[in-house]
Length: 324
Image 1 (cartoon, rainbow, N blue to C red):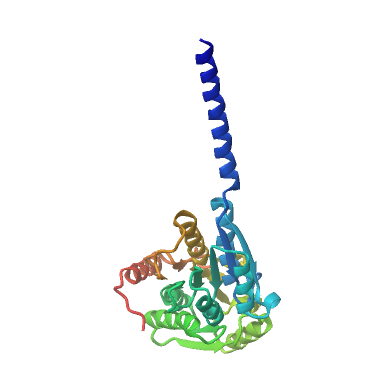
Image 2 (cartoon, rainbow, N blue to C red; image 1 turned 60 degrees about the vertical axis):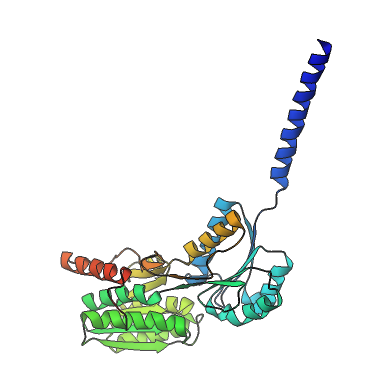
């Protein structure tokens, strides 16, 4: 009897020790580490960088990961920032924006076993996965909306840096305008950077002086300056990347939402679950919920206009409408 009782106690103690060991393993298990190199505009652009960072913060809160980030103004070069993140032993290093491409490729070539993710550009290197967006699809809807409601028949596009990504915004916007009103006049100017809000405001005022009553800036913080100038002048504007209605609630009709936050979150989730990214180059459009319109405010659409806009969105998603 005594032997049986001693054996039972031994089993109980072993079970407790095993449970404690299991709990200890869970507590000491390393969390996934994510490093992020932000675009040149950095945090506070109220657009591209900020919405990407929102996805990062959501992943931290919901997926129990850790992250660190670098901004260009503190590292001097993207290469330096990426290398600093690598030294911390990140599971994945994410570059936010096409301007990171060249430096990321230089670092990735020297670290072939490290996983990288680049937003807004494509790389041939096998260890750099990429996510790009069909900005022209969402911008087409913005252009169609501008042409529907413009009374002057003159609208304006303000770009940041002249490159393929921003060109897709411009191309889609122009195509949408012309689809609805072939006779519309489209003004287009590139600021040459994403950070000069005063220059953006100046370009905006010049377009307004030429009769433009709807402006579409895809220019980061320079675009914020353009939007605020439009509000001062009492004309309409559109936001970009995130829903920018809060910037100018008398002016922002809608925004072309580019779901960088969702793309970043989903990539981190994939790393957290499987340890690697499956798809090399991902392209997100309306069909994939990568781009789309924020709620339409400030102005009202007729039932016919609303139906027409929905039809255009469906045709773009199904590939029935080609943007040229």
